[in-house]
Image (cartoon, rainbow, N blue to C red; front, side, top):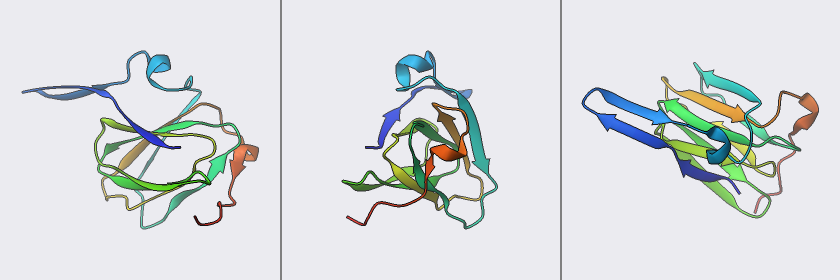
Length: 126
């Protein structure tokens, strides 16, 4: 099931610094691909799960909502801080929506892009 992990954050009078240091020990996978989504309109993004890919999503600016269904449980996550990192497992059918106008969603993936890795069929409603 998808879950939030909190990243290390340092804050002082100069600002804030969030760190993903030694990523192999923080994330449950080795990063093979990085992408980010921004300038999003009212569209819903995602709408899939994967055969092999595990992902880590961080809204580094603004906010967005990610709904998740792993076939057994449905849950909704608000990503509204760059300290929150949402881990999406292969079984997690997810959709991303409610992006603020200034949102930037950064995603780390465990695999390189492969169109055959995507499963678009949602689970039956729980």
